[in-house]
Every structure is written in structure tokens, then in C-alpha cells.
Length: 474
Image (cartoon, rainbow, N blue to C red):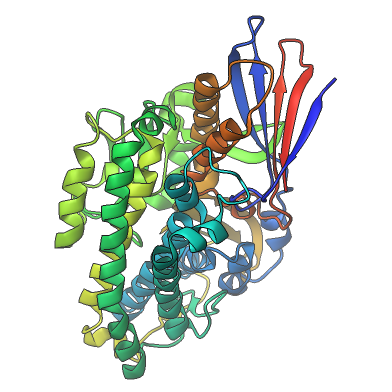
């Protein structure tokens, strides 16, 4: 008879998920599956809406990364209008996206993942959370909270609110940066640099004590996908698609995101609402790829700013070819936060940010448009088909968490094989599996466009499918 164990606190992932771990005849882990059981519906109910409304609607998919959907949606609108937006609008969108990267990465590292790494994988679960972190590392927790606040204030200064700003529109943006806003953002820069430096130094100490996690937390060959500039530099809003492999070789480069369907296939599974995209030329079995900070740093050749470029050089030394351990998503996030602060500092004195020429006006010139942007969790695609009046007839969104789905499944299986040795699930092992998922910082409400609670349950099944143990959180 299955044993049910209730473990508190609620797991630190955004969304509702379930894991099944399958044992063979000898009681060893044969496979593991990561199921997302929230229903997907956002794409369907957007049909019939005017295309112009989508930048205001799609940020409601998620309260953590609304800016990512705002900007990808606006870019899809640009494509349907067939316009080149004003230079000022492009720079302002970039500035907001940098704020989004900072606020989301700070939440992931300081609030969701640091309790494991600083308090210990085997620490009591009632202590191993953000409240325990505040109690034991109060200065670090406070610095992380303020760094996230900096990113949120960049968003609010530009868009009028921290969450769901209705600011980017097809053809440009609604308002420029003000001198007061410039002054406010500038006042944050020294503290933001100090906190990112503190976090980078801390994580390097963590790495010295977590060699086992580097080996077993999602360390396997895969492809990597991200946007890059024409010179192969790190890109977060614009540029072209690049795929590279686990040896660090570029296998496809400067691909137009508007034609993503020529290279990205989408597979579905009856036991999960989360799709599994893959690199189409290699098929679903050979085309698994990862997106997000780890992937972006693997596919790029330089960050484009000096402090982050030095960190990128050190990061790339951790791999033979590509850096393949998913545990190093944490390191990649910190490097991207550092780069974002550097770019924000460099952008702030650009006179274009104060321009009033912010929008290109046009009618419906294309009946199909695609917008791609780098969300904190990875490359995001919005694909819209409209009629002659600009009313949506079909919507497809490929979310970063979905693109990491195959890799998350492989990560769960790899960790389970290493830590499960019997018919029960000890709590510390459960936490390690959860952290393997947290490396990807999944946003399950984004990837299924759903609302709901955030529990995670794990089932351990024997070769006949009988439940040996079940652990539920939330």
C-alpha cells in the first residue's frame, strides 16, 4: 500500500507539478517523468481578440515575468505592422528587459535557491526557506531583496507599474524615460554592482563545496539555444537564433526567429500539459536543447561589457567545450545580472531614451507575425496569425520552461538514479530533486498559461506500476 508523506513548506517552484519515478525489477531507478498538470488555455482564448490588445493581455500570463510577454508580444505586433520601430523605442524596450532580468534572477537566486546552498541540502525543511535565510544570513537576504527591487523600479519608472505594465505596443512604446527616472535609476547602480559582486563571490565559495551537485544535477550533453548579435555577442532583445552543441560547436547560426518553425518542433505527451520542443533537424530523441542563462552563456562569445566578460571567461573554463551542468544555471544568472547592471549604466546617458519619437504607425501589412525575446528563463516566441482587420485567428507561444522540459525530465532521472536506493523517498533526496528542477527556475504558469497553487508531488513506482511511496508538498 502506498505511503503518503506530507512535507512542509510549499516547494519553491512557480506552478503545479508532479514527478513519477519508475523502478526496475532490482529496485533501481529506471526512469523519471516531470508532469505539469495545470491546464493550458491562454492561446485559445486569445483567438478573436484584436492583435493590438495582445501586449496588454499576455503579460497576465505570469506575475513574475510579465515584461517578457509584453515585449515578445509587441515584437510580434511590429512584424504584423511590418515596421521598423524608432531607435528610441528599441533602446527603451531593452532597458526595461534588463530590469526584468535583474528582478527575476534575483528572486530565483536569493529567495528560491540560496536556502538550499547556504543552509545545507539536509537542513530541516521548516528552516530551509527564505525565512530561514533571513534569520541566518540577514544581510545577504536584505541585499537580494533590494537588488530585486532595483529591477522592479526600472520597470516601474518606464512602464508606470512593477507588474503588468501596459507600455510596449506594436510599433514602439508609449512613453520615454524622464530625467527624474534617470536620476533614480543611477542612484541604484553602486549598490547593484556591490550586491552582484557579493553574490558572485559567494557562489564561487558554494561551488567549492558542491562538486557532487555539479556532477549529478542535470549534467549531460545537449544542444543549447539563445539569441546572439551579429558578432556572436550576448543578446537579450533582438539578434538571431544560434544553436550550439555540448562540445561548444555552433551547429546553426543567425537564424531568423520569424522562421523558428523550420528548426523547432513541438511534441506533446498525454501525461503533461507542458509541450516538449526539440531541434527539428535531429528529431525529438537527438534534438533535446536547453535555453536560459546557461544556454545563452554557452552560445555567446562575449557579453559585451567588461566585468561580465571577465566572469564569462571564468565560467567557460568550467566546461569542456560547453558548460553542461545545470547546477551552473545559478552562476550564469549571476553573470547576466552583472551584465544587466553594466548595460543599464551604459545606457542611461543615451539622449534617445528621452526622445518623444517612440512609435511607428501603420496598418495591418502582414497576416502573420512572430516576436522573439529572451525572457529570464530563456528564449520566448509569440506567434500570431490575424485576418485583414487584425483580429487573431491563431496564437502559438513557445515558452522557455517548455523548451527545457526534456532536459528537466533528464535531470530528475539523473538525480533520482544517484540518490534513490530503495522503495522509499527520504526528504533530503526529495529536496535534491526539487533543486534540480529549480536550477531551471521553471515558470509553470507561463508554460501552461494557467493559474493555481504551487504543490509538487513525487510518486515512486515499481516495475508493475504500483505506488511504493508518495511525497507531497503544498
